[in-house]
Length: 91
Length: 154
Image 1 (cartoon, one colour):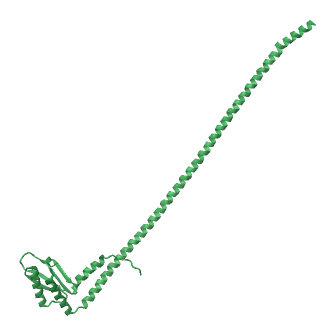
Image 2 (tube, each protein chain N blue to C red; image 1 turned 120 degrees about the vertical axis):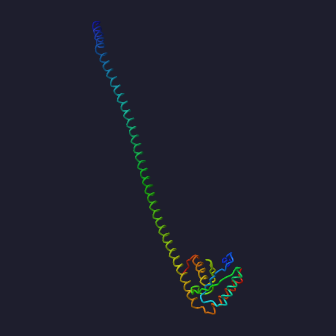
Image 3 (cartoon, rainbow over the protein chains, first blue to last red; image 1 turned 45 degrees about the vertical axis):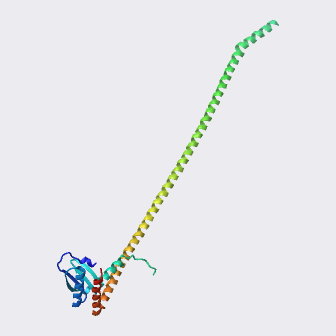
């Protein structure tokens, strides 16, 4: 999952972290450091606020997305429900 | 005496020659003709009888054939009637089947629609509720958890 964000060159990678409420600076710094460790390159982390994600964090960079938000959960739940077959029940 | 006998003899002979024999011959001839005419008539009668019998046979045969033809026509029309009836029944069954399968399909489509809208609604309600009910502290905790998990994962 996280490896989807990898780029192979040495330039700093811009990553946007989308949250429902503004992130604390300490969280921004910690996340940037963690990502740098994971990806092996310099990371510039930008926080974007979007109420629509409801809660949690969504990471996007270079057109790829890693969704750790409630909205992402609901999306996947919706997909599961849509695929489920409707059965007739006795009423 | 002798003269009488002689005359009688001569008369007899003349009678025989000029009367008896010719007349007899005539009668015989006539008898013969009559006999042969009777035979002829008998033969004709027999022939007529034969022809009559033949004619009867032919008539019998014609009656039988006519009967057969009628029977055949009846059977044919009976079969025709059954076949038409079968076709009509089959068409009716097909119509009913198609109608019920159309109804089935429509029902399924409607149910699918209901399901989709229910899911949409449920998810929408869930997201609305969640949006309003998460405190800042909870948000920060979730963000912090996320960061930790990123650190731990693969």
